[in-house]
Length: 86
Image (cartoon, rainbow, N blue to C red; front, side):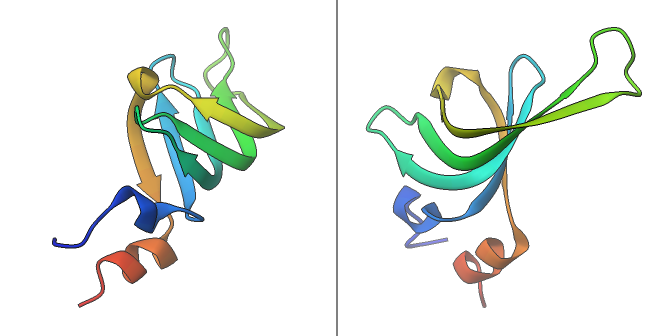
């Protein structure tokens, strides 16, 4: 896995889960020196607090996600194949 750098993920479609169980789907626009993410064209997806079967989704545009709140990051298939092509 040589050559993998944060810059190689710029413009990737990402799915980020944070510590309060919200999810963000957006395009990685920037990573600051502290590992915080800036996503553009972002949708926030969360479960209803009172009914787990209900999911709320809203477009929030540009969002900054602090590194300390990130639980997981997934990239789209096209980005995965570009980075890890054999």
